[in-house]
Length: 127
Image (cartoon, rainbow, N blue to C red; front, side, top):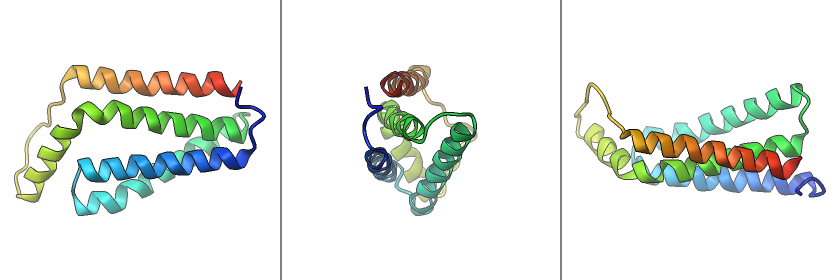
């Protein structure tokens, strides 16, 4: 379905989703260092995934769609955990460290499920 769309639109989609995701994470985890490092890490991981997919024979538009949809799924999947992230970040700013940061299992299942569903949607739309 998305196959005839020019590649430039996929680049725009990937950039827009990256900006939205990085902004959401910066709001949910208000740590200065995180705000600067996380976007670089997510872009580097996305570039690595696109390069790996290209070396495996997938087209550039399909890999960009996979990246964009997966990051959108990650943003949706992390939404229920945002309050925990904010509370833990505030504790870290106050110097409190924990042994474990327990995330409810339902949040993990929701996050993994939303990423998988979005990745499958990208795969289906680009084939």
